[in-house]
Length: 486
Image (cartoon, rainbow, N blue to C red; front, side, top):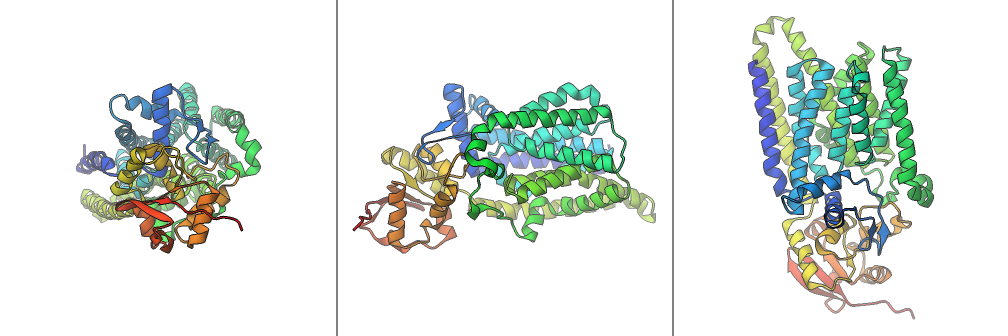
């Protein structure tokens, strides 16, 4: 094995070890706490939690539970919070391997594929999905891309079918895959690119199955929301919250972004590579579905970043081929190692910066301790007012009902509820009391992350109306005032 390959392989092993070391130190994303509750219910009853009395005063969830069953299974050897982090580590390690195999299958070069795997392991966007089922869904998509891109697709129909069915029960991004595959068919037909008949039949069959599955699983949501269900019933205040251009490029990975774009230009407009058309079709599906809030921004970014990492293998392969045709060919290994060093150093810097940003955006240790304190010191029926993206953590760790959380399906007035939560810590006293009375809430959870987002509201200093009952970084208040109609 060449020195360059040895270095890349060592870097991959170091990345896997780094993720294994750092994941336990990070809190979960808000979605992670939702899956924590689901896994706990599965472990207790064997079934996911559908009827949820702690969210919005009682509502139903639509669950694609495979990820939750995976966490519940691991929880038999560790507690739930550790189990979901173990699952995260396993999925990230498997995703790094899957990017390698997909890139090797498409680009046909081991060194380029190893580079793609290294680039994936340095993606900052992975951090934003700690505890999210998107990681398992993305792994299934990578496996499907691997088998679909192979020439003997008819020999792998059984494996493809099994993985696709598993994806259906994992995450809504199966629809992203279907839309991407339909775009792929459109492109290869338009460009008259050679393909197998079995490939088209497989895509048509998967499309019909996914439509049938969606009509069954989401029928109540379709009746309840109508067309809005296609956009997740996300409140207007939270739609189209995209990072700025620089932040977006960083989250997509600096080198995968530019190398991936070059591969798209080179292999679509010049070489017309069928595998590249597949990745580009999925990229376009991810872009448009994220724009229209069909998938979350975090989900769209990590999917796009993964595809760009695969595409970057083509650019890396062309770069090495170009060097071999020059007088610098004798220094090919040295130039590759220098380029890898640059990629790793910049990747580590952006990953560390993103880790600091991520840590400031999630619940701190003090916040989590405060939530757990509520479980033993506050009446279980007391409803909690907090930021909307803290609701799942409060329900999971304290077992208290919340005014709202970040799951909006089957909620008829999500705009009003989330709007009230967003303005609560920025409003005046009378309005704050009005909001508390409106939702029959009696507890205010003022987390450290809420404190970082806005200055402490003046009304919390009114001890007659808002009694401070916990103060250790995060603060918890008991609301005692009510508005009386004159």
